[in-house]
Length: 303
Image (cartoon, rainbow, N blue to C red; front, side):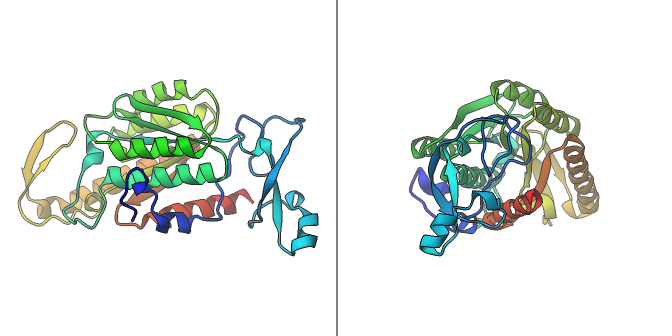
């Protein structure tokens, strides 16, 4: 991985895994989009900008047949109005995201989420759309509005480098306040462990969807939270409230895993009923696989 700030989160392995895959709008979003993104507005003139390589799923009408005749390669025409989709990563920085596993080879949740956000923003900037970043706990902490260009991308990367987790969270009211700042519809990737109570989590997601945003929920947990591998008598501390509990994890393991499964199912079902995409991720999964598989799924569905 690259270790030099602020590009540490641009892991070359992750970027290679998503090279050639575009993020496309699933729903109608505001602005003018040609070929890649559907728009509720029609009748605008467009200005040719450049070419890019053809990718499976592109509409045939966008292929430049003259370029094919000259080069024997498929290219797609891109227009000025294509580069108009807003994609905002909402990253949870509450205390529970600061959990660090005993396995030093595995990323913590906040660091894992930062790699996801960095890769998504890089992808969006590469396809000449507008990337943004919002961090939050019980309120919005950082707001970097969607913009185009490498300079803005490096501003996002620098902010990710400086993040620290801490404090409680309340997803419902927080997302209601955040959505007031997102005045233009677009794609929202929400990266959170959802430790705010199911009703609050789903209520917040519903508000994002109600504003006609295309919402992707990345439900991120540490592998320890998923597998509960603890053996000896352990003192567990809530990273948001500081409450502590001494208990025998072996005795409580089945109850814990049953409740975790119910929790995951409730969040997944709530996202489905709200109209948001849902992906459960634990920190033992390679980030490059998580992002690539989701983008390929999304592309396949849009055909």
